[in-house]
Image: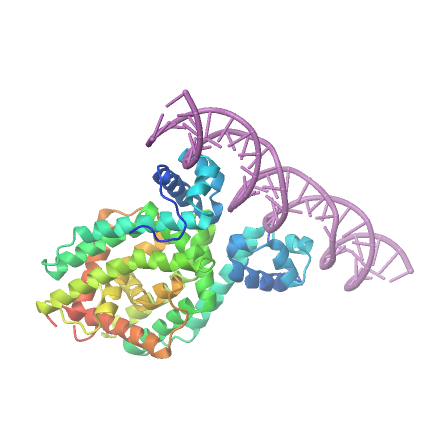
Length: 207
Length: 207
DNA sequence: CCGGATCTAAACCGGCCGGTCTATGATCCA
DNA sequence: TGGATCATAGACCGGCCGGTTTAGATCCGG
């Protein structure tokens, strides 16, 4: 359930405030965003905003974790563990890259990374709500695939991490540092396919 | 040569200012760092600081790129291309992870990521001075190794990126989000070895 | 020992920010 | 209908920041 942090009130204007917060935080970052502008964008007075959220940081956390949850849930919903590795890995690769390369994924990641040391709960919460969920799902899929004899893996957790990392190759770092802004479906498919090939070369059935 | 940005003056106090800037920026981030404190730490008056660097952003860029250059150069210096893939890949893996997991590497990365969109030249410059150098060196090593028949690769650039990404698995994201602060040599060696194995499983000599 | 360049401390400026408070208006339920 | 709760606009506060300026100290080559 979404009630992560203490003393966040629910009520009629809750979503309204959160939407305004998302828009401004993602546009301007945590430090760059002004509470006045969030309130204005949300169509709410500053006093109202502060009656729902005790301070700026809690407001940001609530927004960021809601985004991650929604994203991770959407990915996991459509995953079919009965499919063979090539299919499932490609699906996960495209999902993960789709989020990481998207405007929202990029900005949430940037802000969480930037604020992680001045605001440690945020880093942990982001990690739990996003990367960990996908990683665990992939891990348990790999376990079932191994039970079917489709792959052969000793360290499931590390293997899952390796595959996720493989998917990021080239594209993600360029996006992160603004070298490139968007990528064709072909480019993404190329990287994902290469990730699948490399991954299965080590633990695939031919092994 | 270090003269990247326009209108940065050289002089007696140049390094002094840069050292103060490094200390405060890495401790507090870009927004968090105050120019007053940088000047104080550097043992220099604010007026002097502004006579060397036209503004805070240029000062930060100069500091960040100097750090990256130094780091990348140190790695590349000790690389011996005549060694076989397992040796060279392990060396590069340990070097890259050593930097990424270090206090300085972490902070430089965090700040550059955070400021990349409000400050696009910084993202590009960091990318060029750090990741790209290592990637290119690895790429050209892979080319020579392929000439010796030790590996078989069609897309050298993508392969280099894949290996770097494989090295990050598990450890780096935990460090980035503050889940863990330090890692044993054994943990690092385990991840690097797994990266080498996965990488060579696809393109190694047995293939 | 002089004179220009360099450095210094500290005051100063305009501006923005997070957060509080006040005084008024809307809503709702008994 | 009346009173309590909730929302509103916006003034207000203390504080910090990047950057400029001033007025004087210090250095150094000739």
